[in-house]
Length: 116
Length: 116
Image 1: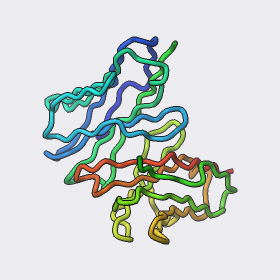
Image 2: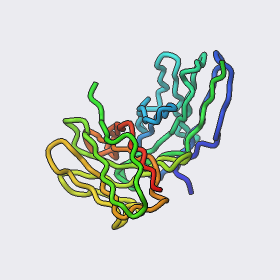
Image 3: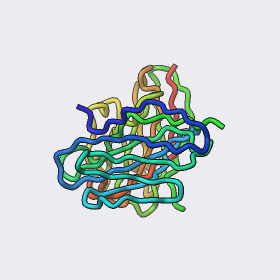
Image 4: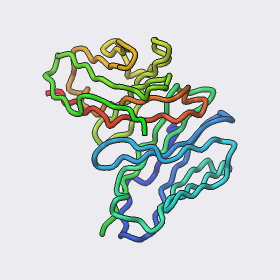
């Protein structure tokens, strides 16, 4: 079973629309950490946010916001008033304090296309 | 802002040749990683490295692969006898402490390896 599921393979919206990227995770650990990374066309992986399992407070950073809900094991990412520069592949990732690897378990990514 | 740097950005090699990918992690970080991303697929954990030895490795990281910290700043991934299926983007990464303790993993820009 996948530990991190990003069911949306590709999303295409017109600039200025709001868009939400879904992430559902699976873990037996009570302490874990969730991340979002952005991979623009140039290929690098850019860290966006980290959230620990004890902090369910939603976070807003400019046009970006994240909704963490333990009850549904989801950590969704919303971009408000999208811009062409937001076009990228976005990865959700999980780090588990108990089991799992030292590193991160990534989802398959969501390719976001913002059309002008 | 400190960053992880990788060289080369792109390397083409013939099947059966040995390749060394180089990385300079963020200077005060203690954990180093290599990840792989086959074109169009998700990012996969290969190996983590701490205190001059492998901390953890995935099933992908078999005898064909090795890592080394030859000096105080560089961290290398060696791939022996490359195969066509080794063609991928290889990301080096580092974190201040163990990712499973909630530390953020910062990635380099990647080294794109093409095996022909």
